[in-house]
Image (tube, rainbow, N blue to C red; front, side, top):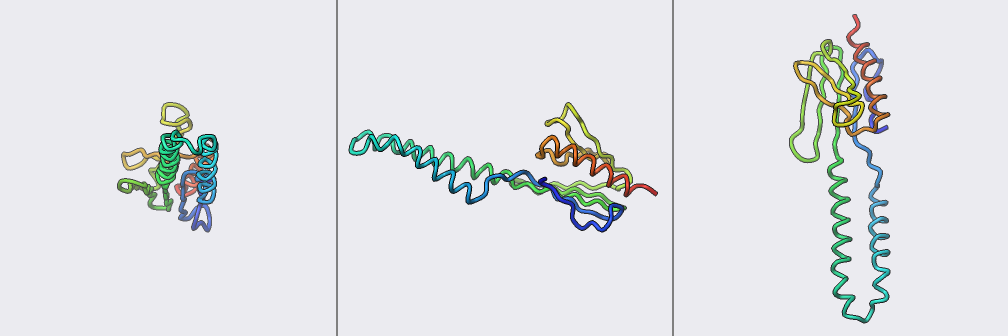
Length: 165
């Protein structure tokens, strides 16, 4: 799963949760994909060797490779989101580090934090939110549906353990 709990000695003490989107394409995989696309796109050009038509079509093929390169790099950059949830007996804090734009921050007294799951009506099915201090914030919207369900169960249990007397 693309999240993990850190600094946990017991469920009733302070814990830190790190969440990030899936990154299925490694740098090596990216290189292989771009090279494969280039070689496959180059195959029809072998029949055009020695003709003027080759030079007319070559810039379009190179533009396609460059466009694919740019799109995959942009997607990879946009997926560099990191959410850090710190759950403590007194304070709950959620920080979201965005790839572009300012970081976002939310905090509330742990006793008043409520974990909610919206099965419908959110941007994604089984949308998980934290509510406290007069605000409701999303957490893990980039996770898969099953991962959001598991996250909801874990968060609910941890918050309940921290707020029990």
